Length: 155
Image: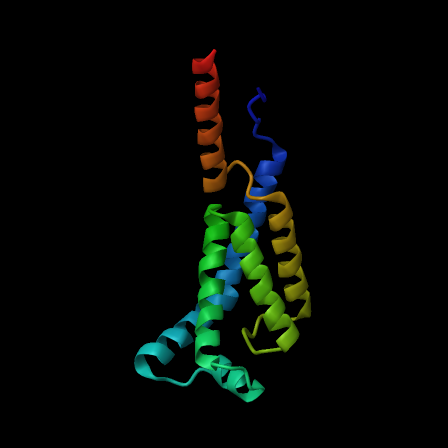
């Protein structure tokens, strides 16, 4: 039987990394696109991202723009609370790579350095997971306790 995992300094660093990643990504990048997507869907307003995707010749630009905006809205929230962190980090990484390579106008705040920073942080979160201070850590702790109780009951 494995000893229980202790909470250590890497768990604090992963929590800090999740906070430093998700909050600015939402506030500086995703918030404006979400407002524009909402106005496009419900008020039929103009959306610069959609116009740029149409000019690129992407198939179904409205579906692609709304889908990418939803992924970049939901995934950082999942990363922030630590729920399916690796999956959400991978989805965010793919969406950011798409915007980085296509040079679409996602945010005025995004430049090459910010993209590289976000790509690096998502890669670290994919490799490192979410740590103990997350929903993933909570579920893992519950699983370990149940397994320990089953092993103890079997003896």
